[in-house]
Image 1 (tube, rainbow, N blue to C red):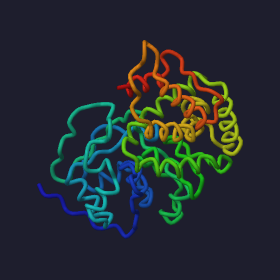
Image 2 (image 1 turned 135 degrees about the vertical axis):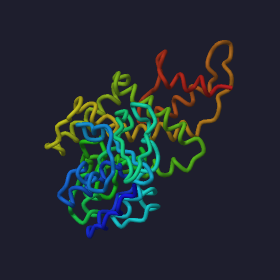
Image 3 (image 1 turned 180 degrees about the vertical axis):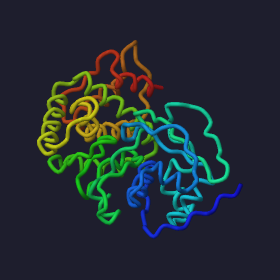
Length: 308
C-alpha cells in the first residue's frame, strides 16, 4: 500500500547542530500545537516503544521512509537532516537496550530506544538556542562533545539533559575552553583527555588533594550562587557541577599528559628520575605545592603505561 506524501508544512523548524532527533521532533510538534505522537501518526509513521519520562533518557530512531516523510513535511533536504541529527540515520549512540530496529512499511517506522545516562544528549546553550530558533524556545538537547560543553559567547555550561549553568563567575572555564581547542590539535589528545578526565573525576570524588578539593568546592558554591533557580533533578549539586568545576584542571592535566614522552625503565626497582620531574611539572601546572600519587591512583597507572 502506498501512503500519500504529506503536505509540506508552512513553518520552518530547523534542527540545531548535533541535536537529538527526539528534541527536534518535539520542537516541530510544538510549533504545530501537536504532541510528537500525534505528529508522527499524522505522517503515517508507525511508532513502537515509549519515550522515557526523563529528558534525554530515550532517543527516536527512524527508518528511511520515515526520515524522508519528515524531510518532505518540514521542507528540509534529507541530507541536511542526516548531517544535523546524529541519531536520525543510524542507531542511537550506546543504546541501553540492544536489538534491531525493524524497518517500516508504507509510511515508515519509528522506534523509541532507551539511552545510557552517560551518553544522553545535553541541554544546549539556552541563549544560542533562542537565537537559532527565532526566540521560540530556549530548550534543546544536543550530543555535545566535551570541547563544546561550554559556550564561551554566553558563558553557559551544558551540565546534563535538564540544566545549563551560567558560568560568568568562573572566567577560568573560558580560558580552559580556549586551551581545550588548542589541545585537540595535538597528536594523542583524545587518549590524554580520556585519562585526564578519569583522573580528575577520581580526585574529585575521593577528595584526594585537599587544595584541589577546596578549589573545586569554591567554584561549586559560586555556581550555586549564580544559578539560584537550578535544583538538580538527579543526584546533588556536587554531581551536577563536577565536570564544570574540574574542567580547568582536566584541560591542564590533559595537555601535560599529551606532551609527555615515554619514561625510561625503572632503576633498581625505583621510578626513573624523569617520573619525579614529570610529577613536579604537573604539580606546578595544577598550581599545587607537590604531587605524590598514592598506590592505586590513576596517575600512577598512567605513568606505568607510559614507561618503556
